[in-house]
Image (tube, rainbow, N blue to C red; front, side, top):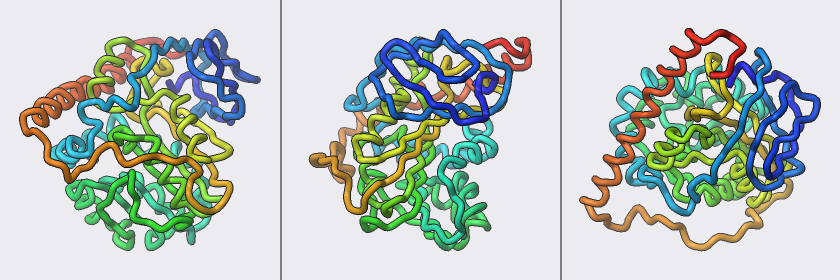
Length: 338
């Protein structure tokens, strides 16, 4: 990915069949999706220009959750993953330079800003936020007490408010925050549209949401494991969810490790940073019915275990993928897509 990313922000027109770049150094891409004529697509990280090829089949509908795209499965998934989350998972999927690159569009330009970090987990992303905003003005929210216990032990986050909560039903008043940040959380939301609607509600007028997450891969085997494991939205789906919630000036920036080449082919976990501005105060104009998933309802333990085990096994593919891509980067000549 890095080899075909450009540092300056560029404007794209996303249309069915092709990506039409304006003043950008590659061509011949194919990107299937609905038209979003007023969306900016920012490419980051300078490098050798290549010709990326998009060939996206339709992603599995968000209304059909994957095996770990449930709150209860995600709770237990992170119960075990939290043990080595910062030491192992972040090395391949969510590095410090990727974090800082993804947070740049959030415009964290005032230390007095009120910021909510939704799905903040161990506080890895929050460490990037408090570089620019006083920790006392930042709230970390996550449904996993095991992840939050890690955040509480980090010295730079001692003054942050740390609370358990649901990304689809935030415990903040309307028009509360200057910035909403969520990194690596949307993958587990049963209803991503509801979570983004909540992001709109809690922001003040003129506030900005920054949502960072994975992107649906183009390689068939990666698509298979993505659909088994958790939600990998397509880029145009992120944009559609933001616009339906009421956000304006929606922008999408691709994010990847420095050593990753070959746009979207394999689909690393963190793939893009999407931002939008709340134009008016109040709740989102989008109306939704009751939540699809009620965590208080009992579940069949056999069905739960089956789903959890299948989803966890599928995740192993993506645990090994960064190692494979790093090795290819060492072997394949620079300038060639991998």
